Image (cartoon, rainbow, N blue to C red; front, side, top):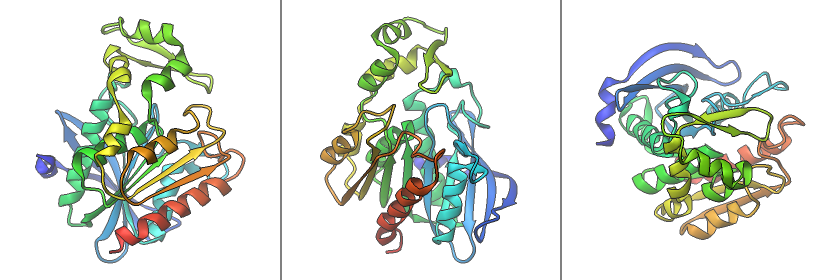
Length: 291
């Protein structure tokens, strides 16, 4: 079933990364009748192990643009992965970025389906080594990573960066119990979700329902592969200690990376902490991607 989507994949275009020896292709693949758009970065040489990148809530495959590097964090991450010899695929979940759909229809289950389809695509794409797939998920993308890893058992390593581990507690703290209760009664009318950074996102009732039912710690407990977890002690979104809970729920090789960083890894101050986290992630992945 995971491989069923691959035959319909098609290449939309090609660009070249300036700071690494890799080609980038924009690809599309269908999930439930809608197209998911992604960027596949391919280092020079033989088909390389590949890292799948999942963006956060309200984000996109190129994630937050950082002025000091004049590009998005996931674009930068893909370049660094290519420099280390790894391919990568960063996708827009349906309703985000360039993928089909409306953001208001976002659900955890829909994003998990997109992630599983992306894994299937990579397993069958001859341009990458589909037997050696790793995952990085940031924020809500960490929730998706926990489920994709746990349900598929396919990734040879998984990294969760500032991951959403307890949606009910996190969103209740962010929005207040009244907004959660209201969101559970909106039906087809999108409900407002004020974010800590001064803007609002809007989702429909199914998203609020899944806030109460999604259990990322239980998802990651089903995954027996190597797990890297990064958390910030100054995170304004994810409660401190969430990383410990991911580690406690997981059995297998693991590493917990804790630094005094906010939800955006301090990148608007400088790239030092992010680079340290990315280097630690790649070092953690290396034995499993290279074996």
